[in-house]
Length: 139
Ligand code: HEC
Image 1 (cartoon, protein in one colour):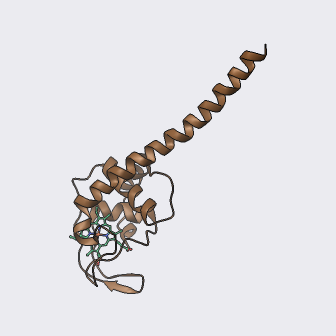
Image 2 (cartoon, helix red, strand yellow; image 1 turned 90 degrees about the vertical axis):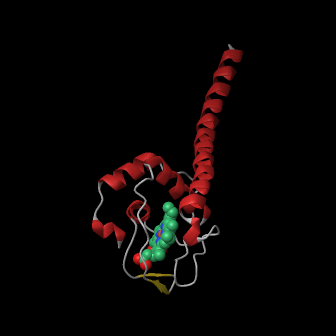
């Protein structure tokens, strides 16, 4: 009797850890792919280290509201904004070609790299955010 009980315990422990590591693997995948996409779609302006450039391009070191972030990546941004005490006023182009998965990966990268997050942004979050788009999300 003892053996199967221990075996079942071992199995359930393994599946708990299995769950944790699946989450960690997904985060890692999104982060790595997000870093690549960031290099292609964002780094020209915001720079590879996310510091931005002078008063032309703001730094991405202060990721705030995620809905706003996702909407800006997809739809671009116009008008004056202030980031970390510096004002910027130059249009950021939209990225109509980025898919929901791409945006989820870029968001994961930025929020894990420069924000305080330690998990990934699911595609579903991006899907819902883009579906519920309001112009005011961009401000
Ligand atoms: C062609 C240059 C350019 C590219 C490429 C670009 N941006 Fe921007 N981004 C800007 C500019 C300029 C602003 C400031 C817009 C304004 O003044 O209204 C900005 C603003 C932002 C903001 C708002 C910052 C804040 O704290 O309010 C975020 C977030 C952002 N960009 C993320 C990204 C991401 C992520 C990518 C890649 C998918 C990207 N940008 C690609 C130029 C760019």
